[in-house]
Image (cartoon, rainbow, N blue to C red; front, side, top):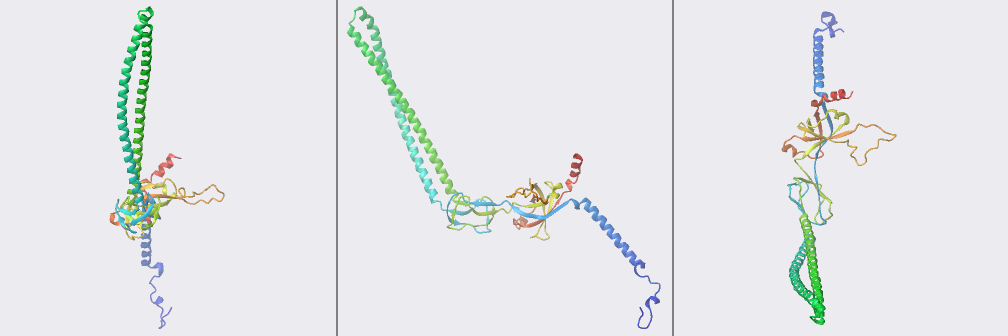
Length: 376
């Protein structure tokens, strides 16, 4: 290449090196190669000591043990006392159902209790009267038995006298007739006493029946009172109201889903790890959590438990792998992770949010080697 004046710069500077022949270029390349080698060695050491023990997945979500609010009784809704997303405390009233029918049942049960108790009092009074009648029958039996013994003694005394002619036969016959009459009266008195005692037993059975009726009525009263109390739906936990489908005037059935309460302080993470990642995951390991809704905010957690089966095993229709068109698919196992965050952060987390979790499994790195040695 020549300039406008016809001169050649290369020919003017024949000693100037070009490309790799330039020492500065070689030093730059050498320095770059050295930096890359150092970075590569650092990455390799870090990967061997740290990176390869970090198990991560983005198939994870915020979860909470929500409580479904349902009615225990049937009836029309009088009032709905909460709104969607409202914060409620445990025991706070959520809605009221018309309880007049159950109040009438409670009043009826109370009346039945009063009737049963009054009948029991009457039976106790009759039993006391019967006790007096039994005592009277026993006294009469004693008097008649004494007369019968006297008549029997008279017969025994006059029989030898009548046999020798010392006393008239007619008198002996009279004493024998009196003895037989006394024996009949004793038998009648005994029967009367037995009937009185059986009557007392009958009154006792009736009294027990009245007591059972009172207890049954008491049970009905308690059930009616429980239904009256159940007419006011209350929050079983503290949290926020969601999925509210209840309206005033609506007729509800027992067990019908009316709303849900999502706890604010019981949120956790459910991470679905591949089965190939579970070899070193153990309860108690530290977890780093990145919430999509909170970019740049790293949360801490701890592995709480590992599910006893894959998600497919607990599905409504578990897969049947014993088929001719089987295709192997890597399964996922749910891992429950407890959040170690402040209440301020927990208030920002909503069940269903997507998160990315990374579990540090370094404390279990030697367990697989021990398993291999134990099971050659």
